[in-house]
Length: 64
Image 1 (cartoon, rainbow, N blue to C red):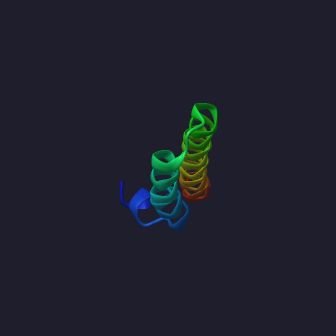
Image 2 (image 1 turned 180 degrees about the vertical axis):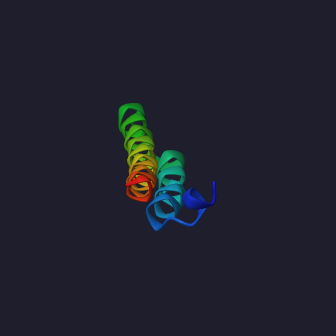
Image 3 (image 1 turned 60 degrees about the vertical axis):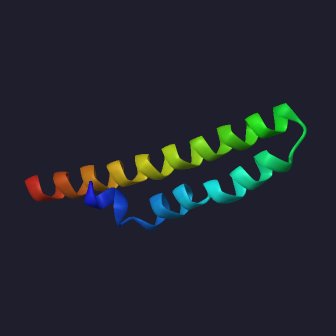
């Protein structure tokens, strides 16, 4: 769990929700708001996948 909390990519993607929330409250187009949230979710997923990939690489390097 610490590897996620201490990773800059994960932290920045999670904190990127603040502008998404602000934009959600001011936007009148539902499709644009949906795309914002989808984009934010994809960003968080990519950051988490990157951390998992790095952890797998470290694990493989230790086994070799």
